[in-house]
Length: 185
Image (cartoon, rainbow, N blue to C red; front, side, top):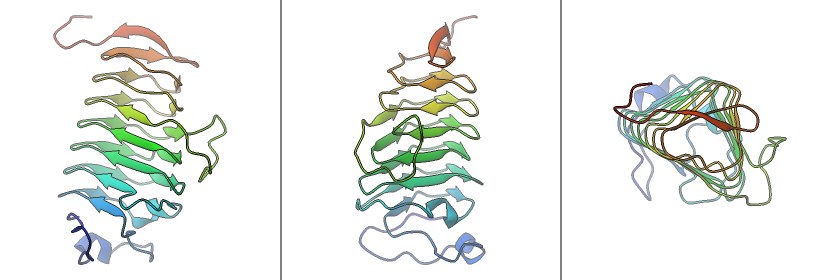
C-alpha cells in the first residue's frame, strides 16, 4: 500500500480493491511505502480524533488479527521494517514503536490491566526502541518503555521501564538476562 498524501484523498491501492471489510482505511491512517495490511478491519474500533491516529513505517507488515482499538486521544506510530502479528492496541495514549521491531501474536498494549476498549482517560505513553522483540501474549501496560534491543518473553506483563538489551520474563516482568550486541551468552 502506498502512503497517504497529507490533506488529501489517496487513490485506492490494489490491496484495498480486494479488502473484504467495506469501510476502507480511515483518513487519519498513514501507511508508508510497501506496507502490508491484512484488512482495513484492523481499524474497526479506531475512534481517535488525532490528525494521524496510526502511522505505519515503510516495509512493515500488519497481519491478520491486528486491532487498533484507540480512544479519542489514542495514537500508534510504528517504525520501518516492523512486523505486527495480531497485537491489540487498546489505548487512549501514544504508543511509539521503533524500527526493526517484532510484535508476536496476542500481544496487548493496554491502559489498564482489564484492557477495556476505547478508554476515556488518557494514560501514560509507551515507547519501544529499535530492534525490540515481544513474545506471544505479552501485555504492555502504561510505563512500559522498552530500550533498544529488549526481548520480552511470552506471557510477560511489563509495567515499568526496561533498559536497553535486557531480556525480561514473568508477571510482573523481571530481568533474566542480557542480549547486548556482540556478547556471547
